Image (cartoon, rainbow, N blue to C red; front, side, top):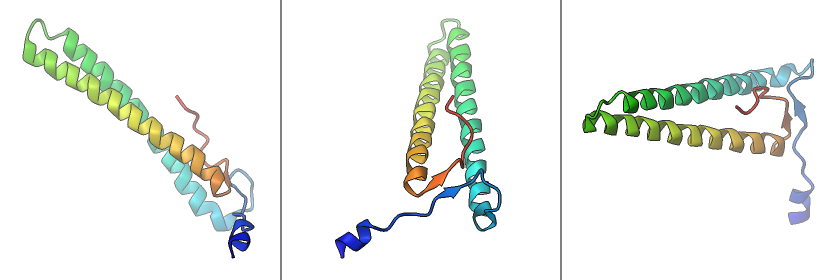
Length: 107
């Protein structure tokens, strides 16, 4: 029984090849997911830069400086989470036999 399960291989789904109409919806979803991840990465970087500006522009006000530090910390945590999700997706797709689904590189 275990040997029979071990011999099962997932189908090789190459989203870049034409003629895969059955999997085109899955490829479109994965492509959109790649675009969403890119937008989230950019948003986290912008929020981090916003936090830097808020911290530098605090002018000695401890409450504003604390808010700036918090924004920077949340930006870094957001980037770490987004990169983690991106890495997990990059490792899981080949495991399930899906190749060339997300063409947006790591930033």
